[in-house]
Image (cartoon, rainbow, N blue to C red; front, top):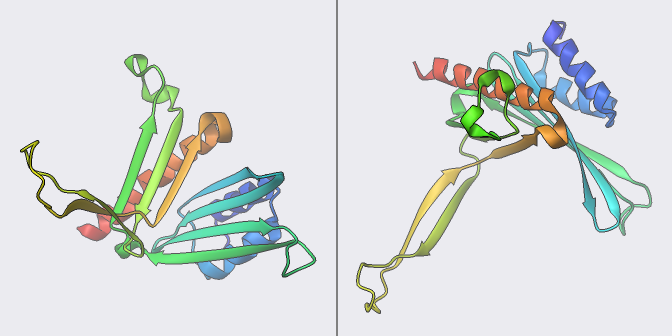
Length: 193
């Protein structure tokens, strides 16, 4: 891996300060020497009771695949006397990606312009590994009807979701997610032709 994009990705991971050697090694294995067309690095911290837990997500778009990497840290527990981290990756062939959903939150929408950016972005990517079914009791139009009409519902693919905001992650990360979503959408559109 020698392209400028790979170096930029590594620098972003190192800037996060979150086990960069482990994260980069896990991604190197998944990328297997393939070049990087686009990437997103999101480092987030959450509070679990009185403990601070950190997590990093790295999305990588190569010419042929979408690579999703997650690294989590784990505290000492009943199974181990030392804290540890787990780093996992999933590589999905581009032709398997069947949905790229981008939701934007814009403050003051009446004065919105693309150069001012958005406050928040939610990126959801589906490739069919996980499907969600939302069911609710079906009903008819008769308010006095007591019959059982079964259930109605919807299914959706949402194998992966990432939410970033300007307040929590910075404007640069929000723009990086939008650029990544555009690159992924373009790659999946090219496959569909």
